[in-house]
Image 1 (cartoon, rainbow, N blue to C red):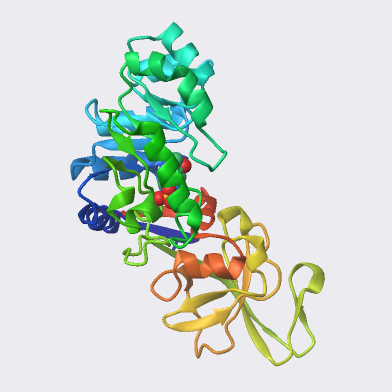
Image 2: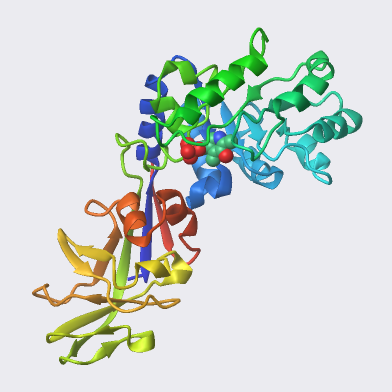
Length: 345
Ligand SMILES: *Cc1c(COP(=O)(O)O)cnc(C)c1O
């Protein structure tokens, strides 16, 4: 028995991509940045390329080189960070398309590798990455004369469809790109769900592929089972773990499981979250340690071998809610120590 087993369901990822793909007329890409939200970009990109995904998106160039090896030469790989100084060779060697974010990046790109394809990111109100209207206007003619392959922007509030920022950003994006005969990309998972107005030519779902909110229809992708190392009986008044943060108010059976905050069981979930045995919720008690977490299993009528942290009775979003964070952060926090298993597509 290994200490903790993380199962990643590639058939669910492929199914989630297909479902998102049917929601729009446009091409559906795939965002595999941050090691595919912590779930292994090389193997996931491979699974997705096999079912026809053609446009992949990563945050930085080095992530692109990893997936280029696994998907072969044909699919496009776009880099959100654009053309950073010192990364030119990576871009050319692995045929990555930088999404240029500023006039300075445009200048750098055209001076170093003028024949290498590039895309343009526009900032439509998020104030994070991309050229704002004025900057775009100042380089527009020069950029267009070099044939950018994609124009994109990103929504700040697409997890809240009713937020008026969405329509404002859409208007700004249209104003900056209207009439241009260049493929456009605007929607991540949330934008896909907001309807066809937001879709343009290529969509960029990330979290929806990996089974997270706001894609409520998503098939769950991740299962996490953690082994019990030891159990013990507590008398009333005995405390558990660092700082005596939890004290037994009844005779209690405690199980210590083999994963802690270094494995992504975020510390804020101490004394708040649950793990499951079948459908029985067992409270996490005391503080989460680096490698260990303590569970109240008094309600179980036998000693469990493993307890389930993510699975049929607790999604990544349930867990995120208990921890005061979002599913994205739960996924990208999952550590390197798990025995990782893949369910083949
Ligand atoms: C992360 C990211 C995405 C994917 O967003 P999800 O909400 O995970 O679908 C798309 N586009 C950009 C620019 C991003 O940074």
